[in-house]
Length: 258
Image 1 (spheres, rainbow, N blue to C red):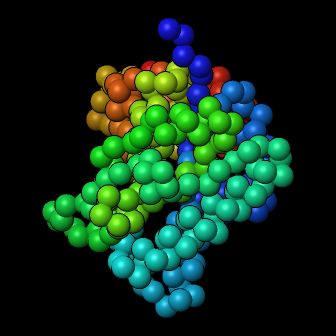
Image 2: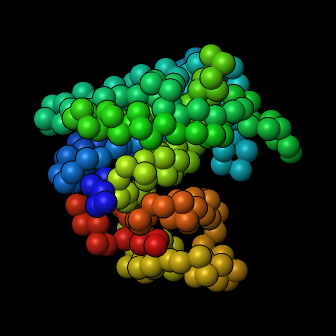
């Protein structure tokens, strides 16, 4: 059976929180043909709100430690301010957007991250995505806009990395769609030279990834992004593309992970 194509777009907070960049991104998102899902971050806004409210922001190796107070702020900012601003702007563009967290409709369930070297607090790891529920929303004509919060089934919200949410959502809907996952960030793709935007690596496979990490070409936060991408492809996602928000209407560009 031929499955319809679905595009899952993950956009970082640097774009969705910038009133100068967001309108162009959303116009490009609306122009993507067929059903689609938008997953967004919003960490900078959460940090700014925490500062205003006198709540300390603690980061360990680039990951946010989510205290009980920080979880309240994350919920307020991600599911409220950032999510509903995106939804309202998409509605203005004629796109029938529906803002959700993982708790809404029970679409993303997980567990609190186990304490090993670091206690990340109210941070969740994904156990299950209800792809059928998401498929039902898409079939009804809605465009889900997913905030990076999940639930544990026991009444608790958990803060979850938006890249992980996007990868999990993409995998969860593979039984129903031919899925392309797109990670948008500030660079035009994975670069062989971080100071040269024209040095985009056009394709990465698992073996190529091993070479790139071994020689230090790929490092830092790009490693989990590519690992998430390879895991998604191994789980049935057709293709993952890492590109810039400006290139969203040219998905032949960027770095392709197959």
